[in-house]
Image 1: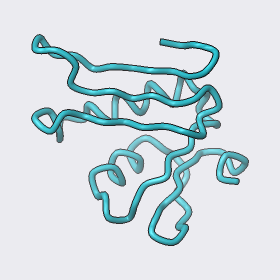
Image 2: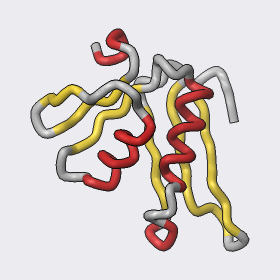
Image 3: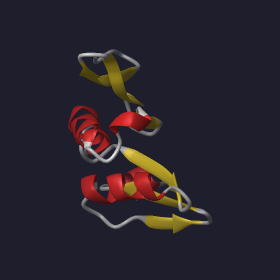
Image 4: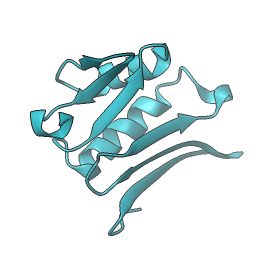
Length: 100
């Protein structure tokens, strides 16, 4: 749902909500989560890709721990530009201005 302050998406199954993805309107603060029983089904990728479009492809920023391989794979599949390493995190953004 789009609002003044952010965008929120949900993935549902007949049992209920299985995934959530949200970001602020500027795309600088964002999260994506998928219920453990529904992982490895590309649900997170689809949520992230749609969020990226709604937020503005160039504005979405995602900071991921190097110790989180599932999220790293998800972001690598959605973002076009290679990430920038910052300590123990990788910063994904398709616009250089979003990385600052």
